[in-house]
Amino acid sequence: MTGAILALTLAYVAVAALLLCLNLATRFAPWIKGSAVVVVTALYASAWFGYRGLLGWASPAPLPETFRVLWITADEPDKETGAAGTIFFWVREL
Image (cartoon, rainbow, N blue to C red; front, side, top):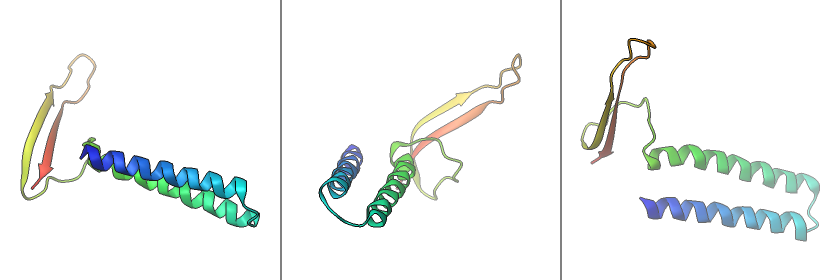
């Protein structure tokens, strides 16, 4: 999993470097350069939300049919502050 995260990070760094080269070293029309910036920005945003699934961040998604439990954390409700309790499952889909 760490290899996938590293590969995605390096891929987007390479794309950003190519975009910088495109904008500095070419004489393309300004609308082409602007479109490239918008597309790369959208790719960065989609990669950020894609990382959430790889990194194991909390998600409201239902549990898969078959999974392996890696860790469970239970926080009891706090009567003084009125904070609700939470239970977090860290699972890996099989």
